[in-house]
Image 1 (tube, rainbow, N blue to C red):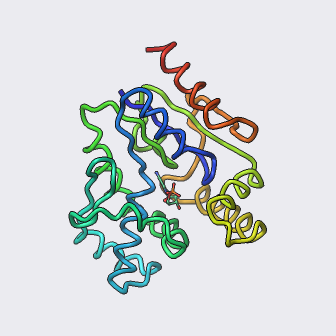
Image 2 (tube, rainbow, N blue to C red):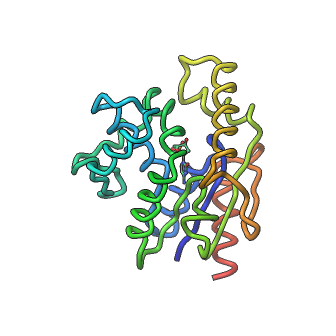
Length: 211
Ligand code: DC
């Protein structure tokens, strides 16, 4: 079974998808981590992350696997290095190359084969798994999402985070392929005023009711 969740940065997707997966005994797969891993690999190799052809060449030589839920680059667990500000800054540009998107989509579909998974990203309900058993779209006001990020990054200031969230939303929505959009058959949940547990309960209730 595939449960797919999309939504903008800071809508609570990762935290909630992970918790739902734990509750149901499913595997959790964060598709954004693949873009982050290709970005990290490019930065480590001294490649300009905005040079699309060079990033692609580097990605072709980079092996990305998932071991015990952690992303590994060339066999080494790099999960802890995927959320630095440099990776945050460039992952969205790297993810705008349709050739990189195709690589990520095939890798994700292959991993998911025959498994029960909860996956999340920007296009898991529309492009990667258009036939997912359950689809959700999480949303929240940009100010709420900025407040959430501020808790994780207390050294930053609110206005800077809010600006970067809005810029990221714009890039995610305007992407030529894999743009963030609400699938027609997705359940829309505004998480602005809900706790993590309330959202998890809502997802699990839908899944239990219809399966
Ligand atoms: O969810 P995240 O912040 O870890 O994602 C990292 C970047 O990858 C972000 O800029 C959005 C992009 N992304 C995407 O384009 N498609 C996905 N399915 C997942 C993430």
